[in-house]
Image (cartoon, rainbow, N blue to C red):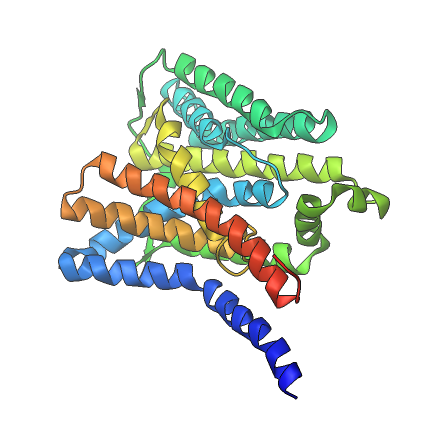
Length: 333
């Protein structure tokens, strides 16, 4: 009996640690919110909460597809530049007299095309994901700058998207509720459909998927396409939110997007990016930005914290995703 107890004790202990680890990000979000509120009560003002939720919602849309790209063991560093190109494409068409329907759909289509190109180059031609998306991101950034001749494009009417962004259901922005539904659907796809299982299997063993008849090439094309579409939708929403097209807007989302995905990998599925974790991390970053602004933190301090969180997310995801899984299964790390 003593031998059994001594054998089970480390497994139970590490399983318990892993169970706590599944939710630490949510606890950090709640703790951070109330810590900022204790220092600056304005943090919980209705207007500030609306601002936080609206900015977090746009970011959450932008990185939804990126979550699945990284979960599949690949990388996409072009997502923010795709958003910038979609942003400038939409604003450019609006400035020339096009309606919101044509301009918005064109912006989304441009992002979808870039995402499809990324998927074909990485999935079918087997090019390096990092090099490929650096290259396509650079093309998107240059094209976005060219549309506005290096400057922003102002628009006079935010149109129906402006009304949508301003709409509320009680104290909650309508956009935030739409994002909740979107992420709930994405979670269902990730956890209940074979599509989600194939994504995680691709990261672990692509050859095994091929052996059972799954086209890894098509899977990668699909996840990159989804990433491009999500980024471009966010870019179009930013046109209405900012009442302008901003060619350099992508740079402000680079660290935030990667940090959200890697930190999100420390929640629910330890060591593996997942949509619920990403959503929680996006909210945490939005609270950090808002709370830091209320406390008077300069931008560089907030960027340092974000960079540290990104490093922590990568390091902790690798460490806990490997060692704790091994201990729970009775294997050595």
